[in-house]
Length: 112
Image (tube, rainbow, N blue to C red):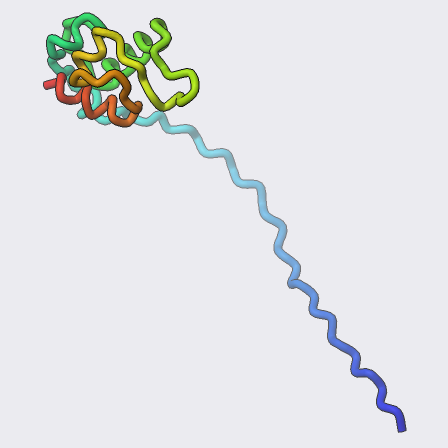
């Protein structure tokens, strides 16, 4: 007698329930953290770049990036690096090239 090959039971994936369309939630406007909005005193080295009036750290960084772009100080090949001019060298502690991550560390030394 020849054995019949056993039939393999086909496993079917369980049917997933159709997802109901979620109701759009009303957008809640986020309140900025008051610590970020606190005006800080600008150090002498930053005066030629961002001005001398007290301003929040976020505004200082924005103005610093405007200065970098206006004077084309971002490295063309390695975009993460900033090539310092004479004003920025004072802020960066004399370094000619600083990464954008190091930049915030150097800038924070000139804010109080």
